[in-house]
Length: 50
Length: 136
Image 1 (tube, chains in turn purple, green):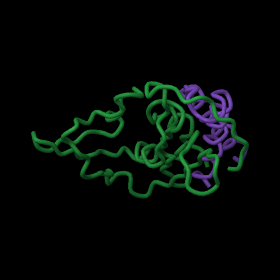
Image 2 (image 1 turned 90 degrees about the horizontal axis):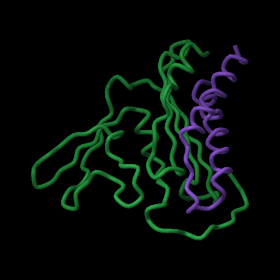
Image 3 (image 1 turned 30 degrees about the vertical axis):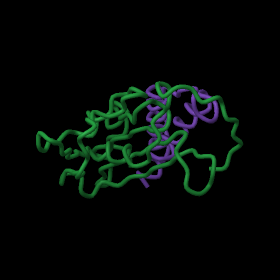
Image 4 (image 1 turned 180 degrees about the horizontal axis):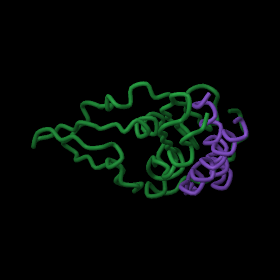
C-alpha cells in the first residue's frame, strides 16, 4: 500500500506541474519553481494522507 | 526551505505571480466569499474570484470589500497539508506552494489540491480526486 500511495502522490505531482506556469518576474527560475511544485505536491499528498 | 536565491529583474504588474498562502487551502475546501458593496451583498465561490490576470487580479470593484469566508459543512473532517518554497525561513511570500485537502475514512474518498506562487492566480489542480481515491 505504501507503493500505491507513493505512486498516486507522484501522479498528483505531475498534474500540479502541468498546471504551474511560473512567471519569470520572481526569484528563482521558472523551471526550478515548477519542479518544486511537482515535489511539494507529492510531499503534501503524502503528509495529508498520513 | 532554505535555498540560494538569484533575483531576476522585476517586470510589470502583468507578470507578477500570485503570492498568497491562504487561498490555495481555501480553494481545496471549496470556500465561498461574501462581498459587500453599494449594491448589497454577493456570495461567490472563491475559485471564481481570481482572474489569472496580473493587473486586475480579483473580481472586486473599488467600492467593494470582502467581509466573510464560508466553508461548506460538508468539508468538516477533511485533513490537509500545505508546503511552500520561500527564501527566508521566517515569514515570507511563497515562490511556489501547494495545498492538499483529503477526505479519508480508511481510504481516500475525495481530495483536492491547489497551487500558489507561480501563476498570476491560485489554481485548483484538476483530476486530483481521481488520482487519490482509494489510497491508504
